[in-house]
Image (tube, rainbow, N blue to C red; front, top):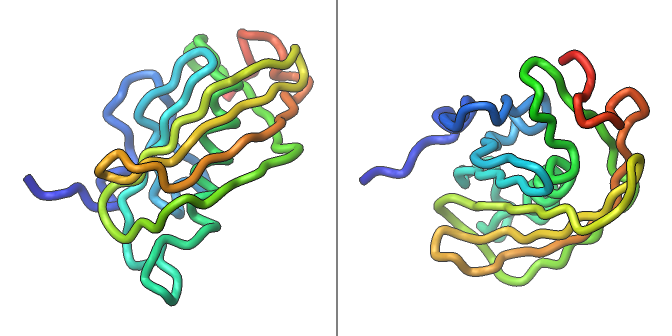
Length: 152
């Protein structure tokens, strides 16, 4: 079976997960799973994601972590509504190189309160090897602090 192209990943097949936006769309991210306290983002590695050594650039891996970790704490179950937030701090550790295939970043909300939360997660390559891991602290925007969110 052929691997999907980055273009095919712009619109997720998973219902009620939302669309990637702006920067996430530019990189070719796809939200494949999203529920309370958990999110999964996938990306098909393309030439544009590689550094001069032919491996995925650390900025791409960090972007995957930032997106998965933040979305893990911003799920909104109400159709047409969203919850917005911002990254306060993010650490990433690079474990192994990735060169091709699909990267899968997962994030899990670990704690926090109504306006600030912490998440951790990892990026796996197509074989299930850990490529990177990270932790972050995020702030939920005031209008998004209710579980019902705000208009999209």
